[in-house]
Amino acid sequence: MVRRLIPLLLLFPCLAVAAATEVSVQLVATQIEQGEALRGALIVRGIATPPTFEMLRPLATDFAVVPQGVSAAQGNRSYRLMFNLYARHTGHIVLPRLRVAGNLTQPLVVTVTPATAQPAMAVSKATMRAARAWSRGRSISTSTPINEM
Image 1 (spheres, one colour):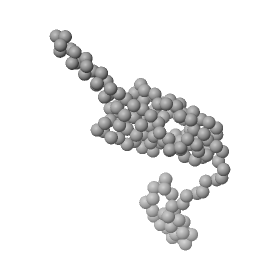
Image 2 (image 1 turned 180 degrees about the vertical axis):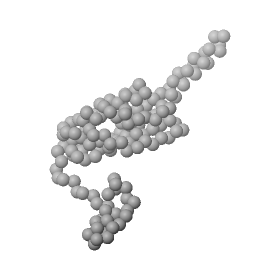
Image 3 (image 1 turned 30 degrees about the horizontal axis):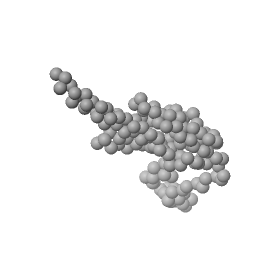
Image 4 (image 1 turned 90 degrees about the vertical axis):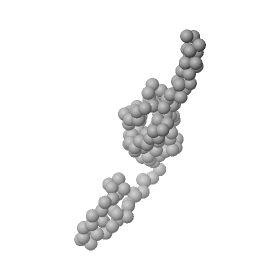
């Protein structure tokens, strides 16, 4: 009986390591100007269910959080939750630890400086075509999504 249990006991630590959950936050930069988007991702490996944007709620104290999407690699149960952050104030801001499946991310520090100039307004080609057509008294329809206009 004991001989049968020894291989099982040796097997359980291996299963625990293989099923370990890893969580981290990655940011594109650690210094931004106020009003500038800070792109980031919550990386989660080793859980069966995908993370939700609700997990980013602790960031809402110092940042406006804009969800961007979730990508998954089902083979290794790995997820990437993408988001943009917009700082609510300037200074050194500590991103708090995020809890995912009982694990915590490491805190990160972001430096937010005052905006030096007004950001240039990005105008798409479709918006320019619509503006020209309107000024000529014609209408034009476009399928450009609002976020690209």
